[in-house]
Length: 96
Image (cartoon, rainbow, N blue to C red; front, side):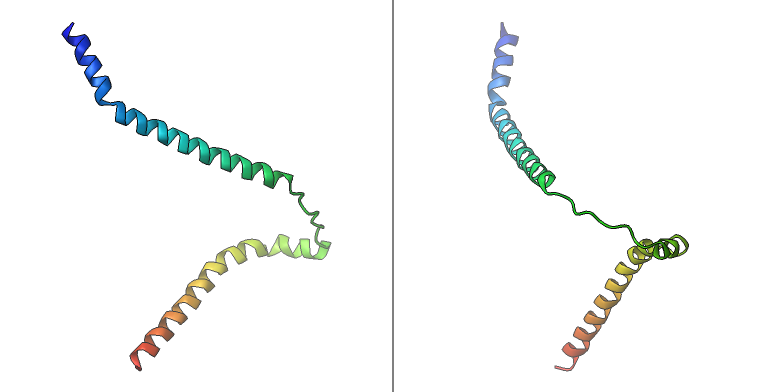
């Protein structure tokens, strides 16, 4: 009988945790519904037809792939421009 009462007390003690878990589940369900709505709306947008590049450009891309070069160079150029901006800011702040 005592163990039954202890179990009841433990359940009553954890009621706030159960309520928080239920609120968290409702919030997660809401965000999942919003994500599903966005996914559905974006699936309704028609994709544009992209023409194939001319054959000489395709041959150049086969020997010298432009996409990976751009993917590598973009962060390098961004870091260099950031470096120049920070260097200019330090120079300007030092002249005050």
